[in-house]
Image 1 (tube, rainbow, N blue to C red):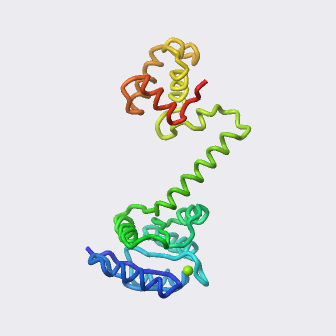
Image 2: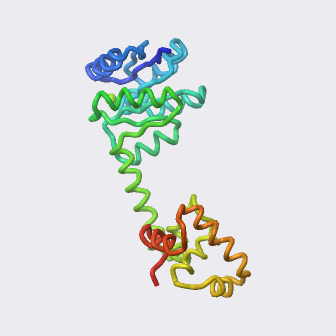
Image 3: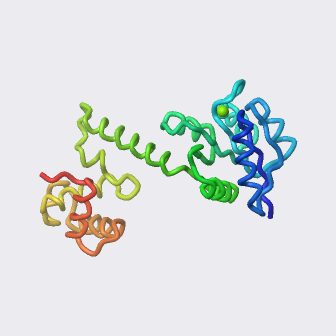
Length: 227
Ligand SMILES: [Mg+2]
């Protein structure tokens, strides 16, 4: 199976470099090149590529806008943004419009090849520096949220959102406070049996054997307050 690719970038020399790297890979075929976002739609309709590699800064229509138009008309479009911009504003914008990958022009040839393979296969690929910046921004926002006048306790904000329910987080905090099942039940106005169920769910979800391990892990990750 050949992966068909088109490249859209306003710098001819850069385009040629990318094409050369991709052509070297026997399963890739670069079908066409364009030098502006305004060409993207026509090139895609004419060539039906598997993957589109798209620059951001171009003279008429930028790569993010071109991606938005493509994905709007063809939701299955697999666009990889290839840009000099690594700040999360560009990245989140690009991902919101439906880009499946985000590469930096400073990457090496292997990363480019890997990205095309992953995205052609239906996955997503972000340059490690981009991922790092996104995570840093996420942490900054989370910290800001934590410092706000928000009356929610810190452990709720930092709770392992995808892991535990709100109630399980409360139980985990009380475990960390050193409370017994009965004590937890009294604090939360639930039966001891319900507390036991919560605890066993917590252990299972956190993949630990006992409540001590759960508490240690929770403290280490900042999921509970040490109070
Ligand atoms: Mg450019």
